Length: 443
Image (cartoon, rainbow, N blue to C red; front, top):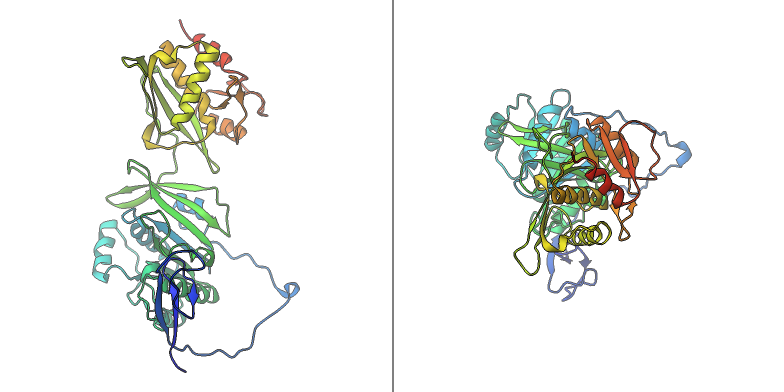
């Protein structure tokens, strides 16, 4: 059979039998490249089929790594599952992969495919990270060779660093191109599902924040994990963007140390400072992200302005939301914030867009203006409307329940949330009630 020549778009992967100036799929210009496809061996041509009534539904036994935060996000690994671990260069993907290999190799046959580093580099990094378990290292990135290895050695776990290094020799395009990434992944996923091999693929993120490839392999995998770091680089966070075997509303937090990466399951004190005495202008807000509630510290300063137009600065929250809250506080509570510079900060570099943050910011602003400190045992949340009302928010009952578990003694929340009555609950209907509550602390 003769070599087949076709053209594909390097932006979206669209295939055409002839060269085109503009891609009909993504609309990009001059993105088509010529590719030679060498003949592949033909199958038997007989399709395998059955009926759903004859299929035996079986739950595979899940594999837990023992790394609590990773298991929380993934929900336990399943034989034959394909996971794409995506993140920016330098965030720690290879470190996490090597750490995972060391954990799983205690009970399972693990193969680590290293396309970007030599075996010597892997050995040196393994020594620094304290890797003690033995596992296979595979340096060949040709998918045909990898398939032969998998069928011969039958590992139970295959870790690939990275998917951009895989290639099918029947295509002339270089490794990392959309065609190679997509076709190579498709072959590898099929083989690993057939042999019930857990497959973890590392994928790099481009400058635009997209999974390089760009996103053409997301539909091929069972789970997509996004590995990122906070703005200050203190912590690493894994979020689940897609998961066919577990919910996608979980996330895990890690710390990168000289000895590698480790879970940080206790988050009660990560984003708040331990004060000896209550300061003014500080409140605590229960951030609900997925199923996890984390107490976040909100700080505010109010000072006399020396400018015609007072300054407003917001770090970690929406500046427009701050404008709205200041207008509501001045209109309904009489605080003259139009004469003061106002600064609001969400500590630890966190970015919060939840409107449930409104009441906590309002509390911090009132505290800063009146110089009345809020008790450190208080946690505050709720949305504030233009009429000065405190409105219901998502997950209010869970925020209340978790706040008490985290050690807070008083929860200030929107009235109307159905929760079992107990000491320490203070439902509010309006900001005027918040004002009375705070000014009642004086003296």
